[in-house]
Amino acid sequence: MSSAQNIENPDVILIGSGVMSATLGAVLKNLQPDLKVQLYEVTEELAQESSNGWNNAGTGHAGICELSYTPNRGDDGEVNVAKAIEIFEQFEQSKYFWGYAARNGMIDDPKKFVSPVPHISFVYGQEQVDFLRSRHKGMSAHHFFSSMEYTEDRETILKWAPLLLAGRDDTPIAATKVDGGTDVNFGTLSQMLVEWLGEQAGCGYATRHRVVDLTKTPDRSWGVKVKNLETGRTFYNTAKFVFIGAGGGSLPLLQKSGIEESRGYGGFPVGGQWLVCHKPEIVEQHVAKVYGMSPGAAPTMAVPHLDTRIINGKKALLFGPYAAWTTKFLHKGGSYFDLPGSVRWDNIASLIKVGLHNIPLVQYLIQQGTQSMNTRMGELRNFYPDAKNEDWELIDAGIRVQAIKQVDGDAGIVHFGTEVLSSADRSISALLGASPGASVSVNIILEIVRECFSHLLETDEGHARMKEMIPSYDESLVDPSKAKRQATLSKKAEKSLKLI
Image (cartoon, rainbow, N blue to C red; front, side, top):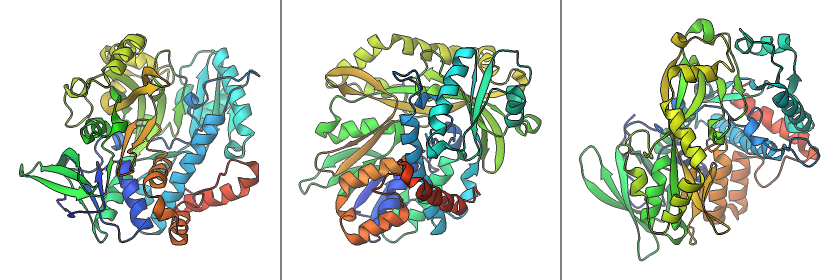
C-alpha cells in the first residue's frame, strides 16, 4: 500500500492518514472537485495509529451504550441524557456521509469497515441498577432512543449476551439494548478514503514521508518541510492550508507552526491495552458491545467494555481498555522523549499543575500499566465471571494524547475529548485529543470546513453539494418534529452501508 505521490504546491496539505485527514480530504474534494490535495504519512501503511482497527474499540459511538455520556443526575434526581443525544446526532452525520461515500464509489464495500452489532449497557449492584433505570427512562423518551430496551430479568440478559450470566452470583443486575449499534474498523475506512483521494485529479498521498517543520511564507501560505524516510531526502512543499491530523504527533507540529493559538497547549499521553480472545467457541457466544460504569479515577476513555470486534472479516472479543502511563506520543515511531520534548515556557505551568492536581489519575495510570494478568482478568470477570486466563491475550491499544490548556485562567486542565484548533487567519488547523473523535469525525470536520473553507459553503452549488454528502447539514434532528426525517435519513444510510 506504500505510495510516493507528491503534488507540488497543492491547495491543501494533510498531515497523517487517520480518519480525520481522510474525512477532511474526501469532504473538501467533493465540495470543490478542482481542489489540489496532498497527504503525508510517516508509516509505510495508512492509518496505523489511533485509527487502526486494534488501537481503538471500534464502537460506533452514538451515545447508546456509553454510560460516561450520562454521568450526572439532575436536580430532579433523574439522569441527564443531553450529552448522549448530542453524540447520537453527531454520529448520524458520520453515518450519512459514509452512506454517501458507499453510493458514490468512494468505498467499494462497506462491509469491510462497518458491521451491525447490538449496543448494551450492563450494570451490577443496586445503586448502578437504579442509575440505569433512570437513564433508560430519560433516553427512551427521545425519538433517537425509542427502540432502547431495558431489563433486570436474568433470562432476558442471558439471551442478549450469554457470557454476562455464566457463573454470575445473585447481585442485582440490569441492562439496556439497542439493536442498531455498529462495530467500525476506522483504519479500513481511512485507507479506502485516502486511496480514493489519491486516484482523483490533482491529489496524492505519500507514505514513509515525515513532515518535520512548518513555516509561514511571506504570501501567507505554509512552507512544509518533508523528509522521505526511504531515501533520506528532504524537500519543501507549499500550501494555502495545512491540516495537522497526526494523532499524537499533532502537538509537536502545532508547536513548530509558531501560531499564537498554540501557546499554552500541552499534551498528556495515555497508553492503553486490551485483552483479546480469538477462540471461536467463546467468540460466537457474544455478539454485542457491552459497556459498564467507569471505575474510580479512570478517565472516560478507559471505561470498561466487552466487545465483539470484526476486523478483516474475522470476529474476536475484546475487553478493556486498560490505561497505562507513558511519555510517548505515538504507538509506532514514538519516543520516550516526546513528552519532555513538548515542554515549552508557555505550557510548563499547565504541565506542572496537571502533575500536582491529577495525582490520583497518574497513580491510576501507573497502577494500570503495572498490574498482573490475574488483576486484569479480575476486571474482566466483572463482565464475564467464567473467563479463564488461558483464553485471553494482552495486546497494546495505541496511545491517546489528551489536550492540556488554560480555561478561564485555570491552567492544567486535562481535556478527555477532541479539541480543534485553528489559526486566526484560518490557514492551519490541528486536531488534538481522543474519544469519541473517530465516530464523530464528520461533525469535527464540518467545524473545520465552516471555519476555514466557509467560501465553499456560501454558494448555492457548494451548499447543495454539502447537503448531498450530509443531508442533515445546517439543521437539527433533535426536535420531536424531526423524528420522521431522521428515521428516513438513517434508513437510507443504513441500506447504503448494508447494515439492514
